[in-house]
Structures are given as C-alpha cells and as structure tokens.
Length: 519
Image 1 (spheres, rainbow, N blue to C red):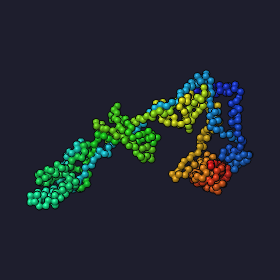
Image 2: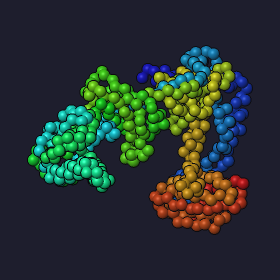
Image 3: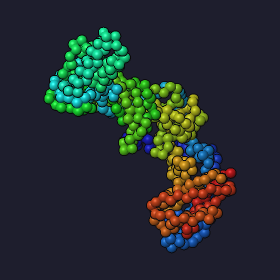
Image 4: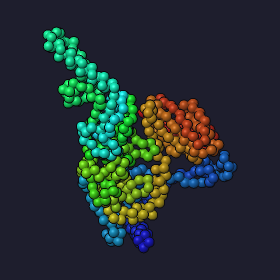
C-alpha cells in the first residue's frame, strides 16, 4: 500500500514539474496541442450515441433534442507518439528511479511442463493365439504378470488335427526313403514331404528343432508346445487347463516393459517449442527425487477439440522396472533459442490490449513503443517486433512514465482504447475470399473498411442488438439491401469494379459506414 501511494505521489510530482517546464518553454507545446485537438462541432443524442447530425434536431428514435459535442481530429501514430513523449530533468529521473538497459541478443531458455501417463510401447507387444483347434493340456505361464523369456514354453495343446498332420508328414518321409531305395522317381514323394513340412511349420507353428525331433522319433506327438515370441511380461492370460479353443482364439498378451511410451497433453500455445528428438526429464510421484531421461518421439498431428491440447509421445528406458504402465508421470522439456532480441520482463508495460516499452530516444527523453512479445524465461522476454537491437529501454520506472503520459494526455489514452476496440477483423476464408467483420452495436464498428478493386470480399455484419434502426443495411452504389436478423451474423458478398469511397447505411440512414476501394 505504501508502495502504491509513493507511485501516485511521484506521478503527480512529475505532472506538476512537466507542466512547469512546458510553461517556461514559452507555450510551444500548448500551441501544438491546441492545433492537434482542434475539432468540428456535431450533435448527438444522449440516449442514442449512434445518432449524429451536423445541425440541431430531434432524435428520430426517442424524440429527445440532440446536444452539441466536439469530435477531435484523428492523430497520426507519429503525432501521438510525439505527444506522449515524456521528458525528465536529471533530478526527476533520480526521484522516479528510472534506469535503462540496452536491448540485446541472448540465448533464451524455456521449460515446458506436462502431465501424462505411462503405457506399453506398441512395437514391444505380442499376442499369442491358437493356430489350430484343440484342448489346453498344460499351462506353464499360469498367472498374469509372470516374466517370460523368448522361447519359453507357455502351454501345451492336444489336437487331433495336429496328430493327423504329423502322421501324413511321417508317411511322406517314409515314402521318400522307399523311393530312394527302389530307384523310383523321387519328385512326387519329395513334393509331398515339402508340402507336409511347410504345413507343420507355417500352420501349426512347429520349429525346426521340433520337426527334426519328429523325423528322428518317427512318431507323432500328441501335443504341441506354444512358446513365447518375445521376452517380457504376461499382461493377459485368457486360458485355463482343459479349455477347448478354436483356431484364432487369443491365449496370451505379452509385452516387453524395458522401454515404455509416455503420453503427455501439451497446450497448443506450447506446441511450437516441441521438437522430435528433444530430451525430456521424467518424474513420478512413486519415486520422489528420482529422474528418468526420455526422448520426444512423436507429436500427434490432430488436436483434441475439447482440451485444446495435442498428445506428445516420449520414449523412456525402463530397465529397472520402476515405471509401470498406467502410472501418472510428469515431464519437463527444456528448449533453447539462440541469439534472440530480449529485454528484462520489468521493461514491458502491459495495458491489457497491447505491450509497451519505454525507449530513451534522447537523453532523459522517453517515448512509448508498441512491441510484440515472444518467449519468457529467467526474467527476460523475447521481442519479436517493434524494437531494434541496442536501443535503451526503461527497465525500472516504466509504469511511472506511462502514468505520467496518461495524466498529461488523457485524451490520447481514450483515443487509443477506442481505436483498438474498433480495429477491423480481417481474415481469409477457406474458399480464398477475404472476410471483414463489422459489429453492429449502436454503431458500425469499424466505421471504415478497406477492400481492393476487382477482388471479391465477404462482409460479415454481426448484429448484437435489436434496435429498429439497424434492421437492415444498404449499399446504395451497389444496389444492395439486406435484412439483418438480431443477434446473428449476416454475410454480404460483392466485387467492387471501381476505386473510390462508397457508403453503407442502415435502413433509417442513422448508422453510417464507409467502404474504401483501393485501386
């Protein structure tokens, strides 16, 4: 509270000292101000400010007498900047605690934090399914979560079809031996042997060792073994001994948990800082004080429409097994931007609608400058537009200068706000047509729009009132008259064929706007 009071007293003192300095300089600034703010007289309705007339009359809406007002002439941006310049003496500068630093290029770091969940890596999963019909005889991997190694026997299955296929293969092998002994043509028997071997290997899943054992024993095995295709953990067991299964029935789901995929939801404003290959520092509440290193492997190309986030996948080694699938985790992704123009965060004055820095144009003379901000980090903020390298900006006391400027020129502050509020909304639609939005709420906002000659334009009238005078809009030069439903947006398309200034008005000729067509 004492700090705010001190700021107010300093601002008031600066205003008095500035006024004294202006008086001592012979009133030159006063002449400039009077010429800049010279205006024209007009009349308006106190109840309906949109009603404007250049002579005394009655309001066509409510019947009240119009009152006189003064409309100030518009100032150029250069004139406004000149008028808002604040000059201080050396003692004033000391009292206001004004200090400056040069805008310089430096490396900027940014850390993006996100919350996510661990999951199984998709390439490290394997499903074991029944290759043929049969009955489960023995189950070796008999519980979920059991660790298995590649090649371990998971179960044994009895199948009459398998026995018949083995016997056919053994008969073909015996026939090939007899053909060789008798000197008969071996081609037919060799083809039968190859066909039987491929059937047992591909369809029934017998390995080369199992086929060799079958040929050596000369006796069909009553059961077949199902082995683990990968090393990992049993995530799902779907059989019990004695169960009959059909071909294609799922038996096991296995996964290698030595590497996990972590999915994080990243807000859209942070996505531009995420790159594939970036290092991510992973933490989990289950292991406080312990960090895991991951790598960004994938960025989802589609946004989540409800949360306005995109999913980012991070791969992390999990040889210790401490991270579990479905465990909540946090990620911190650090990025560096090299040699960007930056100023201290304290140098930026935020007005709500724009960001301003005060630049020392000359010794003890300061002027406001609108800037565009980028990355913030460690007390510094990136400047992407509005400032040049080497210019000296006010790092402390900027808000005091802004207050002094508003106290000295309150009219400019009001004009700046109204100008910002009436800035036209311009966009290009999916069909390539230029779209301009005009808001109707007591007046046309903006009152002046600019289009190009010969180019099709779509004007979107957003009517936010139910006043009788704004029920329709008329373009006299284009012979366009269109009804405007209340609280809805109506699109009007036209293609101007000649340059100039053309008016658009409401049906009662009380609301007026101008369309400027450039060559």
